[in-house]
Every structure is written in structure tokens, then in C-alpha cells.
Length: 243
Length: 256
Image (cartoon, rainbow over all chains, first blue to last red; front, side):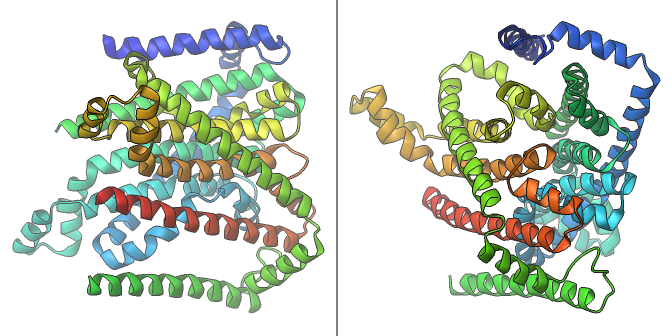
């Protein structure tokens, strides 16, 4: 019970702050929690909104699958071959801290407007954290596992599938948690620049119209969605660690 | 020790070879026309055009604006994050309830609140700095909490034995002991400040490097655009290299 009470309390404090801010700066600058909720409920009833959600969700799923498979594959590679890992690590960390938005013209020129550019943007944001978590997990894996697989004369492929992947699974989930939020951010930013559909596009068009109520409603929807997914992954993470 | 040093050197050598090889590959692909010049211009052309731009001072105003915003955002988030971290650490009950928020904070795409900041703070540097601070302050809070958690108990006890006042204890014991962790926070906060400032300038702004790149893109000025992108890339790499070097020094002190 206590576990749910604390986050609830924090949520309540945030809503109270939001309401006070709304009173302080006027209702045209920031819509109140109640009216935002009303706008969101109204939006949830329209078909156009769900069309945009489906569009974003599709890009997010593609980007997540690519980031996860690519991140784990490269992570395994860099983790097993120690030299390549040590060579790649600073480059990867630098890429991670680079403002990737700067590269958006390049992505657009290569992929064109539309779904592929959004997916590429999401992958760019989400791949590196998953890769780093996988790589570090393999480096810290107990050497006994690899020795055991050598004793059993498992092939390289079977060692990966039956020994390495199960051993690093908890860390991959932890990496996915970070990768998920960054991929979502990447897809949204991609949509803000490079799309005519999706929630990111909805945000930009509302921004151009100065429609604060819609912005807040979409922001609320995204925040709740992101926090819910994050919570689920965190629960999975905790389960893995207890095992 | 010798062997280890040799390995480190070999590793940085390979790294340089990999990076240089990659740049040369792109150069060749661009020069031979496999990558069209409308998509990507050759790295050497980016570089020479970049030097020309820096000499001519065409984007000086944008670069200075962005740098000021990044520095301001970094300073504000480091100080604010440190103070908030101290406060949260001092109140365990507050910390317990705020911890889930801290651990899932980065799941929230902060940029979606940028329009609100524009309405509240007006167009200009302030909303950009605010977004960057919002993005980077939480890493600093987490780093501060982390550092305070790891002060060895012996240090607390010796402070008690020496009857230090809370202030002196904070200044002479807590600050030096947490410094390595704090610096990791500073490093991340600066990286996030870069991301926050440049990304906000893209979305909506009238000046800054991000704005200049977006403007060049919209006007098909590929040479300006790629030179500016290269500039950001080199700048971030240099800043990271310096911060990492200092960070490593702190970390090695911690391990001793």
C-alpha cells in the first residue's frame, strides 16, 4: 500500500503546484488541471486523435524493435571482444551526449519525410543506452559461465543464445527502460520536424496556433503513458533482480 | 603497469584509426559522387567552409548566443541541483516520496513543455535556459544524493569528534568527500544543457546555433548547415574530452 501512496502524494503535490501556477500566470497562458483533463477526455473521443496516436505508436514500435535488436547485437559484440569495446566506448559516450537534433537535416536528407525518418530518429536516441548496458553486463558477467560453455563445447551461436543472453537479461531490461524513454523522445522530436501526422505533429501545429490547452492535454497524455510504461519496466526490472 | 599503459595506447591508436578511416571513407564516397552533394558534402569541404565562416563572422552572433545560454543553464542547474540534493538528502521522508519521480523523470519528454515556457517567459533566451535547466537539473540532484550517500561513516564520526559545526562539516568534510560524485553530475549536466539549448533553438527561436542550422536547412544552404553541424560535433567532443579527463582524475582519487 505504502508503495503506491508515495507516488500518489507526489502526483497530488504536482497538481496543486500546477493549479497555483495557473492562478498566478492567468488562464490564457496555462490551462488548469481540470480544463486540461476535460480537453484530453474530449480529445480521446475524436477519431483524429487516435489516428495520430496509432501513427506515433507504429513509429515507436519499429524504432524500439530496431534499437533493441541492434543495441543487444552490437553490445554482445563489443562486450565479448574486449578490445573493440574499449575502443568504441568513448566514441559511443560522445555520440550519446551529442545533441542529436543537430543531425536532423542529415536524417531528413537521407530518409526523406515520413515514417522512416521518425524511426531513424528514435533509433538514434535509443540504441546507445541499450548497447552500453548490454556491453557492461557482459563485461561483468561471471567468467564461469563462459568457461562452462567452453567445457560443453557449445558453438559460438549457441553460447550466445543459451549462456550469454540469459545471463545479461536483467541488465538488458534495465537498458531498455532508459532506451524506451529516449526512443519515445526521439520519435516525438522526429515528428515535430518531419511529419504531417502523429502526436509530435499535433504538438507543433498546436504550438503554431498558440493552443495551450491542446498542448497541455497531449503533454498530459504522453506523460501518463511514459510514466506507466516506465513503471511496468521498473517492476519487471525489480522482479529480475530478485530472481 | 607497463603492459597496461601499452594497451591503453594501442587502444587510443586504434580509435584514432577508426575515426580517421570513417572520415576518409565518407570523403571518398562524397568525392566519387556515390553520396550526392545534395545529401552530404565532403568533410574537407565542411571544414574549409567552416573556417571561412568563423573568419567571416557570419554566425558569431548565433554561436555566442548559444554558448551563453549553455553556460547559464549549466551553472543554474549545477547550483540548483546541488542545493535541492542537499535539501532532499536532509529530509528522508521527502526523499522517499520523491525518489520514484526522480528515477522515472527522464521518461517524460521535457520538450513538450517548451511552448508553455515561451508563453510564460516570452521569446528569447529565458525559456531556452529554463528547458535546458529542466533537462539537466535532475542528474545533478541524483549525483548529489549519490555522493552524500557514500560518505564513509568514519568521516561523520571524526567530524563529531572534532565538534565541527554543521556548516564547517559541510564545507570541510562533505564537500571534498562528495566532489568526485558531484563532478560526474556536473559532466552530465553540461551534456544535457547542450542538448536542451540546441534542441530548443531548433523548435522555436530567433537565434542560436540550432536556429542557424534549421534556417540553413530550410534554405538549402547545405555548406553552411554542414559546417555548423561539424562545429557542434567538434565543440561537444572537445568539451566532453576535457570534462572526462578531469572526471578520471577525480575517480582515481576516489579509488585510492
